[in-house]
Image (cartoon, rainbow, N blue to C red):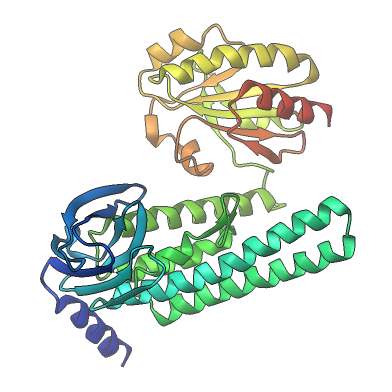
Length: 380
């Protein structure tokens, strides 16, 4: 039965073999004006086309959908977002809106209609979050402890309700790209809705579902990468919490004298674990700044274990032979195993360990911030 249901779903998606979609737009009070059509290319928005409304505020456009999959599009008029669309192959979307984008009606595109519903729910909860946040700040400033406690409880309930709603939406619509809107939602820049390592299961679930239908979509590729990253980080977290293992994953690589140096030899000391690429001049220059910090704190026990992520060992050796800390390189470049062990996805990467072998800081590359962090672990 499940196989037949899956086949029916798959056929319903494949039935729209066209890689095109169309939009018919009417904006009240926007006669003979330009409308900008943009596409979300994973992490940036690119303009696709600009078209002009007629005397009645109407316009139409035909779109070649890349990757034969749903894509996120935006319609902007006079600097105002009129509509957010999620156009799938074969869609014939109709958009009716006022000139300020407050009243919008979308039809003819199931994913766009669903996206509009999701966006409306998000906007409503965001308004509540922002209001509670303002109240919390005000109560903190006047020292109203009881109100602060009450508002924090309300914020917690709001968060839980929104996450539950997002998970319910994912279960109900497993093949919908609208789930991306929820999974990547942020209440503010420091407060994402899905922020726990265990949330990787939701990214994995959606990626696996969408890959069966839209294997070439860049959105799906980015989602899959996010899921892998979260699972790797969760695995690292479990490794570090396992009392039967060392406090941190082991790395053992050759230094400039071809002697194998083990990261675990630094147990009981505060240390920095750094991954870097000598091909990047900025990363090479950072070593010079790092030397000043090392000299300042080496007398208080600071150690550095620096992993070169490069393939030219001779070039690496010529750069690092002046630096007094542990410099290692296996010449495997991006295939060096330490990158996977510590879930490193971009360079440079830094982990700050205290004497107990616990990671207490990551990727602090400004001089003042790093001095503060190192000073803290050296005082423990």
